[in-house]
Image (cartoon, rainbow, N blue to C red; front, top):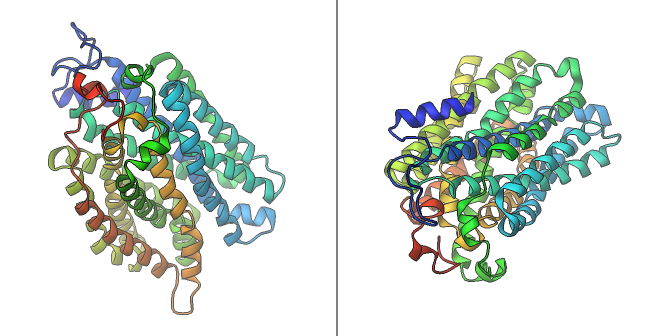
Length: 443
């Protein structure tokens, strides 16, 4: 269904999908006519990989209170499971990123999906809270590898004119996974939190689709025999770029997790005392906003540029904050939730394309994932920070949510203005022979 939807929208935009009559020479740009159908399979697989990864992660977010009661610990202690997951993702980014640069994007992605699905299943059988935390940390390693490998495989397999739209499509996998987890949460009273984790093992089936339909990245095939510099050598020559990307992604991760992780359980459930079904409906509504935002701003970035689209989406969040957390009543809160996630995930819709475009080509399998997950590492205390802020004498969960989102929205807008525009960078199938002369470059 996803593939058919994607094909219909591509065809409607005037891009022909099919097998080229005269395939381009290795490394040459795709002509303006037909694009191989395999490119569609790549995008669909990478979208599903991130969607199912997000689905598994948000199961933990939704059952924090249930896990705490089951193991006899506080909600704050259970929130550390989120911190452990986020903090360990950087290990996975380095591990799976290096495997992707050495052995290829496709086999690495398959190993990655099997790993996180298996650890999700094991989490449902955790006999003690300590083992549960260990499994969530290991899950973080597996989760940390998926985004960077999938994004590089997709961006290297499509022509430049697709990038903005595909970037938005890939990133909407995240709120779509959250949406699926929200719907599964309706069954939590019947299957329990352990049953939810067991359902989370289903992503392992995605490996069959990748194995049968997804080709290797043409960019990696062109460079696989090139002697690659060690990643640290490349990063040393791009210190400024690396620092900029890490700071930007740290703010972006606070933007995302700060608006999502505690919002359903602590704000809608505990603070507003909304019923279980109402909370689920609210989550569905704001995740629809996230999906629409990611697609819209990702597509917009191809028209006005990555920097402008990113900055505008971040700035849009500021006037929405009062409606989002300080309104009363289900309808105003639903509208605020829809709009804030439109802005947050709209900004994120630019990120897959932007990170891959600024990445040094020799380490594109590693660089986007590593800076993304280093941002996760620095943003990993978000849940604990917001719990602490909410517990201050003059504060509550509303101020904790508003404070974090307000600060990082301003920071993202400023960082977007300081960055460089990248939408015309050539890479993957759009690379020219002169681009391939050096194994290392700014793109």
